[in-house]
Length: 112
Image (cartoon, rainbow, N blue to C red; front, side, top):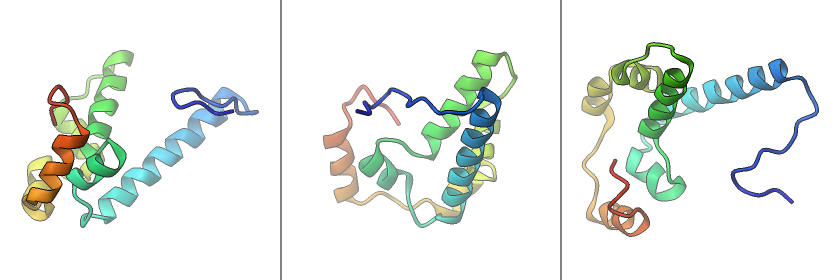
């Protein structure tokens, strides 16, 4: 039985597994770059993560490896452009319904 947070063992070498995981990450990022109609709050309300989370995870991974990567650079990697540019082009004001759903599903300790 698969439990969340646990990896299923893959029957392949680590290098191949890492390459496949990297390919999946790149495909997810590419998909999110195309789907600019999907707002971060929608992702947070449905999946509990968004583009900003991905960029934060990327920065945390870089930090853990001692690779210099600024928050702005990690966001640009995920958004495909500077974050402020993406916000100006694609981010819409969250509706009261979206804000209420976010408040209900995310405790105040989770700032986004």
